Image (cartoon, rainbow over all chains, first blue to last red; front, side, top):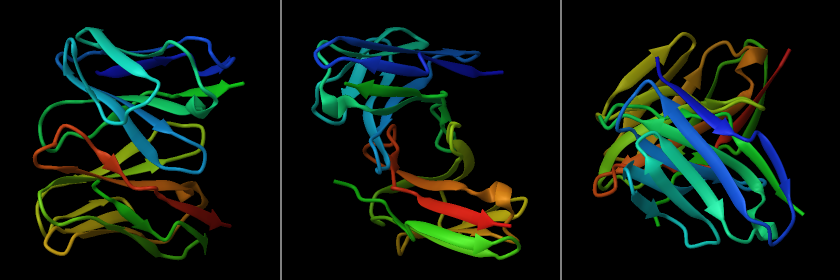
Length: 113
Length: 113
């Protein structure tokens, strides 16, 4: 069966520090991969998605970047965190057929102080 | 910008009540509609994926309908139970960008015993 791992679960980082959140998927190949963020009091905002190794689509211009160095690995990064980067970050994967639903990781609560 | 609107924003019902909420979206270029249930401290969990106008899906006491021509979907919960308390998210993908899912802000349901 397929599983998705996301870590760390919580993170408190000072402003200006770097960030690296990692997500890996097991039990499937060639998945679509996604990073979403929920800011306080708001819905889920799509940040990045990837349909293959090295292929990254950015949805919102911001202080973050994403990379997909391997088929089942998706990394969210920042060189210098801002206070506005605080939020709940979710990684997700799905197969490529039209009726495939998304499977989400357990999330990372990031607080920038 | 593609807007997915959910109403109401929050809902309080008594145990045993039936309830429903709405998801509205632009009807042009529709590809698929997803419903997710998101409990506090957990990841969003897929309920339904619907692709055809007139689709109706059911899972236990929860059902959903889809009208792609007028751009709306309803989610119904029959005989609400306290364990149904969660945020219900509607999300859409559109042709021309079907690899990405755009989420509404959600309807937060609280079922009181």
